[in-house]
Image (cartoon, rainbow over all chains, first blue to last red; front, side, top):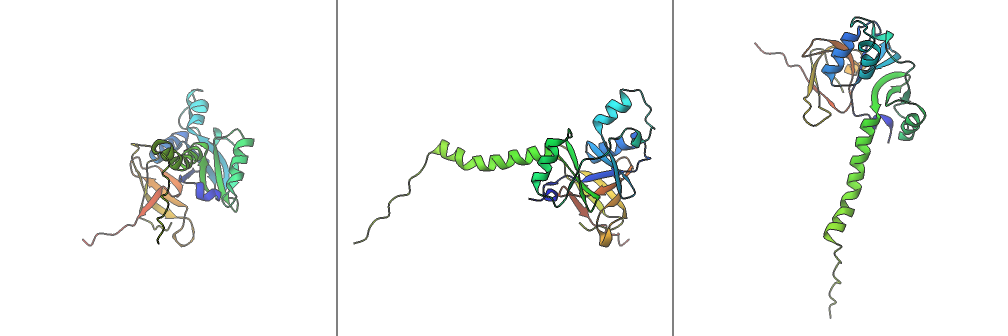
Length: 149
Length: 66
């Protein structure tokens, strides 16, 4: 499976000069916990709801500070056409919970540990179903066909 | 995904009980109606650049005959 096929949540971007109040309002309306910061086509940073708490609210900073002053950079990325192994490698080697998915160095989406875990657990459930059924209901032997003549 | 200015994009909730989200396409930044889209969120009017995934669906704008 390619990374882009496992990216099931839309990505949202804002400009570097937007305020943290604007970023928070977009997060709330879009139902996401992170935004990427794009300067034109260039991916320059990422900001999460946790960043807004730790770097703005907890520091007593005003809501009109620029989002690029509280974003994290550089952004850990994974190629949209890379195998899923690249995603797991990136999560193993970087202390992040989200990865920006890029194609030709341009942002196309976001994937997160939470989304991948939900996906993997769902796949495991599918695998467990026939085993569980066999444990609960037993194994039915196929009857030997009757011989003719 | 293909969209035009005036179309609405609806994003499915990601958690049980989470409402769908709704935004209007203000500008199409990709080729041939493709993403990304500059959108305005219905509830608070804030704008952002939107990169749709499988959780998003386009409702094409149909102008009223009246």
